[in-house]
Length: 183
Image (cartoon, rainbow, N blue to C red; front, side):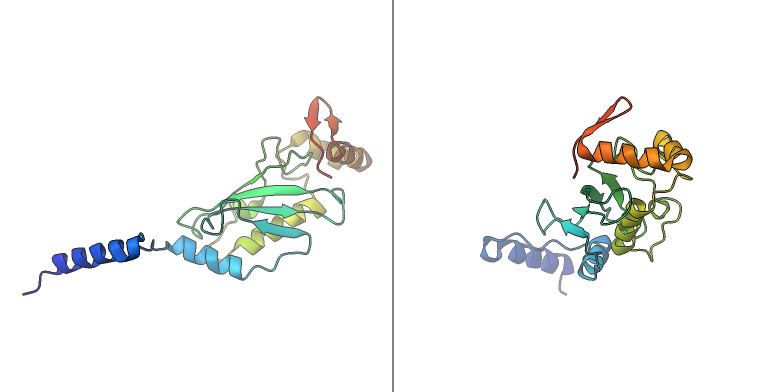
């Protein structure tokens, strides 16, 4: 009778010693789905994606958006994505690395986007999130804010809000908070 455990162990040993290379790491279901999502990306012309840790680390990447309309026209905003191994059953963790005066992004970079929270469903994908982020810059929402001060100004005085956004993007103070230049 063949001992299957010995056969498996021998196969593993052969794989490990093949040309001195490490065995190929098996991809998780989350990695496979993310690979599919990335290969099917249809980004707006104002968005780009980069992999700072190289293409071998698909689970951590950055998306840069440069709105071409609205209050944030001309700005450059960088978001980090951390995708868990159980994606798409859990939404990616998305943070804005660019400090921005925005009702839906707080000063620590947390993003208020419903599809990243209570409205996340496994049928959604990375492309959907990127379009959602893009939409936050073309149509900020004062009704569901993380930055309550910015939301109140947008709601009550849109002209003042636009002035504050321009000042922040140019590299200046809004109230007591300094914003680095992002134009």
